[in-house]
Structure formats: structure tokens, C-alpha cells
Amino acid sequence: MTITRTFEYAPGAPPDDFEYEDDPVHGEVMQLNMGPQHPATHGVLRLLVELDGEIIRRTEPDVGYLHRGKEKSCESLGWAKFFPHTDRLDYVQPLMNNIGYALALEKLAGIDVPERGQVVRVLLMEISRIAAHLIYLGTTGIDLGAVTMFFNTFKEREKIYSILDAYTGHRMNNTYVRIGGVYADVDEGVEALLREFLVQFPEQIDEFESLLTSNRIWYDRNRDVGVLTADEAMAWSLTGPNLRGSGVDHDLRKAEPYSGYETYDFEVPVGTIGDCYDRYLVRVEEMRQSTRIALQALTRLAETRGGEVLAEDRRYVLPPRDRVQSSMEELIFQFKIVTDLRLPAGRAYHGIESSKGELGFFVASDGSSKPLRCHIRAPGLMNVQAIPLLAEGRLFSDMVAIIGSLDFVMGEVDR
Amino acid sequence: MVIVKRKELSFWERLYLPEVVRGLSVTMRAIFRRKITRQYPEEPLATNEVTRGQPRLAVNEDDTIRCVSCGLCEIACPAYAITIDGQETDRFIEREPERFDIDMLRCILCGFCEEACPKDAIFMSEELELADFSREALVYDIEKLKRPISALQRRSDYVYKLNDRWHSSSSTS
Image (cartoon, rainbow over all chains, first blue to last red; front, side):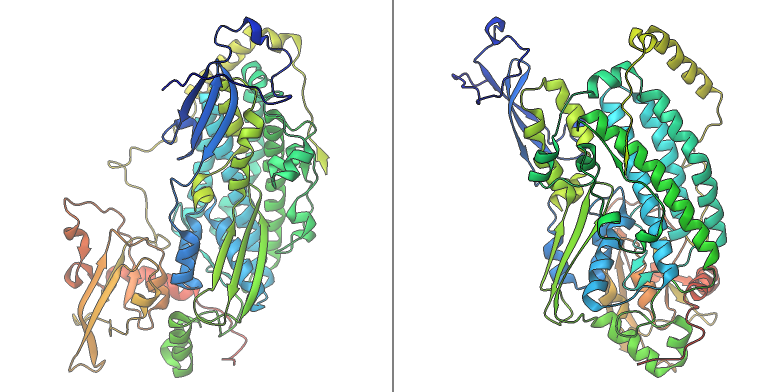
């Protein structure tokens, strides 16, 4: 549908190097729907784009096509039963979401996770981060014409999923984190698989970089496209690689350490200009740093062998299985925890550094078995908000690069 | 903090043609690599005791069902997939399910039922494939869910091993 109307440019908006006077379609605005089924929108995002020729004048992101009422579900399901639902928020990193939710509940209930449990969590979080960044590389690559990237990154991701399959029994939607720790210990077989993967992974990153970093098509389509200044990024509440790409050194793993991140040795990659290319470089470097952290976690795993991964707390954590069979007391705890898990009244917020940014869970409790409120601070939603800002005045084909570089997952945005 | 290095393209990289050749060489090398794809239906994926497949009800050697229809799995299920009606029985356990339905279309294989069960009556089996022609046929009733314990023993042992925790301390609080 074409709408013709006189168009007034927003002050300061037109790019300097474009001659509007020579443009035959000057002043004619076309409204274009991009999505919700467009393959480059990475899910069901609808973008209402106002085009002047091929120049984007205005973009209006329309979210909500994947809204499943997760926050409300939490209120009706209760504390523990919400864990499988957190998997389905950002479905490329289910374990990270599990851990974020568990940390908020633990803060509210005041539970300490055993040391080995924290090490396993860090390991799972870094593995999830690598898997999520691989999806970014693959899907953005295929959107911008680098089809090889898609196959190469998915080959690597497949290895991660096989390891998670060997550990949790599922490839996706793992649901292996519980209040007070993780459900199962990482055994030696899985440890060996992880080490094997992490040792060969930097070599694979080098190969990805050799295919993209100095590739002229990738370079030209990403460099100086979608420039986000540090002030703008902060004003739009962007977090994660998008914020760091703009040169702000803010990482929750360093700023507000959780799960013992302060004891790991790693660097936070930061960009300079804040264009798509910087965000890409930051993510690639983050994968390297994640590999570093995961290897350190593996070493600690060997050191803490035999330790517990789940806190012993009969108010929130199920008793050991053999004792349920033999002890009446434990059987009562089993029934109480499954049917009526109560968390103390109060409020808690915990944010973790997910692959997309600050993933926060705010939970409010009135002391009953159902949450009063559960709010999810999804970083993807803030990332989507930056699209109009970055796309304004750019060519329409740059939209694909911008969407790809902001890296959001609609499951989390719409939740 | 480490600032990522932005690379400027060299003359040869900017020329692009040598890069095409280099890219093709990567492609050629990839042709001779080991294939990692699997022909799934013909070549099924290996399952083991860790696999969380569809939940199944354990039946003892003497053909009696272990379930006492306490309803814990029904309560623990985040997808509301389980429906249980209990009845009395003359057996020692006194209660057994009259009806035990799992809606496999709702089941998300999270394993919470297995975790909640105090009688080792429900386990995640290694059965993964699920297909039928109608929705009704995928609501599994008790007869469809029954499996001899020998088929679930491996998983049972594994779950016990997982939950073999807190040796040092006795029951608290």
C-alpha cells in the first residue's frame, strides 16, 4: 500500500551526503510492513517502516506477536513450576534464564548455593552465552549474505547441545536449575566433553573471524551502520554487548558480581564507535572470554569434586530420594515442598548478564505459595526500542544489519 | 576492560577478488571434512539413562502398578498434563489409580513428576518419538503408560545416584 503525502523531515535527520533534490521519489512516503513473518526479523517482530525512496524515515517496531503471558503465568503457577517457563523466554539460552530466576528466588529466600553449585552454574551460563552468540553470528551472517557462517556456527552449537543433552537429557529447554543450586552434578564424562569442546573452540572462532572480520561485504555492510553513541545507549536502557559496543564498560559480572564471578579472571570487551561492526567484534571477543571463564570453571570443578551442587534446606529443596522412601519426616517434607512451596514475604530483584544484556527477575511475595508479582526485565525489549533510532536516515537494506546486530529473541521480548 | 581492535581492510582485501578465491578455498576444504549431519529417522539418536523422554508408569514384577495416586505429580506438573482419579485396593498399598492420564501434547518432558513422586512410580523413559493422527489418541491412559520396571530400571538407578546427596548431615529442621 502506498500513501502519498507531503513529508517534512525531522530537524537534523537527513543524512548529509544524500541529495534529496535529485531524488525523483522525494516527498513520497511509502509505508512498508516488515514482518511479522519476515525471516530477517529473527522471530515475529513487525516493523512498520516509512520509506522515502530507499531511505528509512521512521520505524515503528510492533511487538507482542509471541506474547504468552509468562509473567501472569508465574503468578498462577507458583514458584517452582515457573522454571520450565523461563526456558521459553530466551530460548537460545534456556539455562541462563533458569539461573536468573533461581538467583532472584534465592535472594528473596536467603539461600546460599554451595560452592560447587555456583561453579556449575557459571559453567552453564558461559556455555549458554557461547551458544547464544553463535546464533547471533549464524543468523546475522545468513541475513547479510554469509551463508557459510550459518552452517559453521550451527555445527559448533550442535556440539554444545550434544553436551547439554549428555548432561541434562534435553537439547533445548533444559530446566535443570532448582532453587538452591542445580539438579544434577556435572559428571566426569560431561566434564571431558566440555573440555574437549572448549579447547578446540578458540580455533573455530579464528575461523569465523577469518570468514567475516576482513570480508569486504561484511565489513561494508556493518561498518558505520547503526551507530549508537554511548549516551544514546544509556538513555535507551540498552545493556549487554549493545551497550559495550558503544564504549561503555558495564558488565554485571564485574559491576555486581553473582555466583562468584568476581573470582574468575576475564576481561570485558568494549567497542569504540558503537556501530554494527563494533557490536560484532564485542560478541566475538566475548565468546573468547567466555571460553576462558568456562575453562577456569572446569578447573574448579575438578578441585571441588565430591561437593554438593544443591543447598540442603528442607523448606525449599526436595529431600534425597532414598530418605523419602524410609523416613516419614522426609516424606512430609517432600509433600510440603511439592504442594506448597512458600517463600518469605518481600521483594527481590536480581539481574544477571545474559548474552543479550541485563536479564532481571523481580519477584514480590506475600508469603504464600504463589508470587504476588513476577516481572521480567528482558534485555531484548530494550534492544528492539533502539531500532527506530539506529535505522533513521539509513538505507532500507541496512535495517537487516541493524536488526541482526541488536540481537534480540522475540520469545523474551514478548514473553 | 579490553577495547576491541577495529581492523582497516588492506588493499588486497579491499580488492575483493583474492578474497573470493580464499573463500572458495575454505569451501573446498570443507567438502573433505567429516560430515556431521545425521540421517535422523533411519539413523536414530542414541538414548541413555540421562535422556528425559516421555514419562511412563512403573509396574512391578508381579504386574501391580506402583502408583498410589497421591497426586503429587499432578500438582508438580507445570503443564497440567496429568489427571489422576484414585480408588481403594485390597493390596498393601491401599490405593491405586483408577484413571491416570497424561496428555502427551501438553507434556513438556521437564521431569518434575519424576522428581516429585515419593513411590518411584513414574519415570522419564527413553521413548522420545510421538506422532499420531488425532489429538485424542495422544492422551495416554494408564494402559498406554504402563511399563515393566525392568524397562525403567536404568533411569531409576540414575535418579537415585543423582539424589544421593548430603551424606554427612542427618535430617534437619
